[in-house]
Image 1 (cartoon, rainbow, N blue to C red):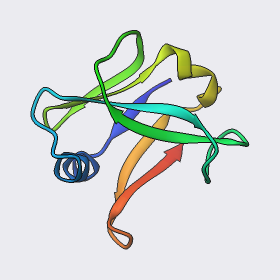
Image 2: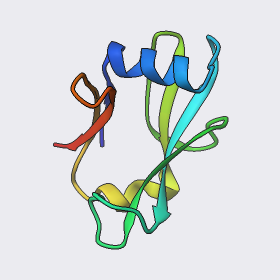
Image 3: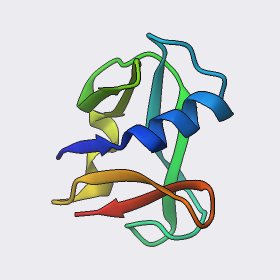
Length: 95
């Protein structure tokens, strides 16, 4: 799986979560929520340190990652995080 985060999305996370350069942010699978790739699950975010990242990218000084334990959720897809200007928030797509 691949993980891409656009600069605009990274800037949004950096501002909203008050992240500093060299911080890490994890995309993780959580039970419930809406709009998920797998029924009954959705993505959550948290500031944490990678343990066994299966996908990782550094944008705007922030390391974004997904742990190997959450790889099942993506099946054969990759995660692309962009910024939706209309809603002024990140947008997830699976490619």
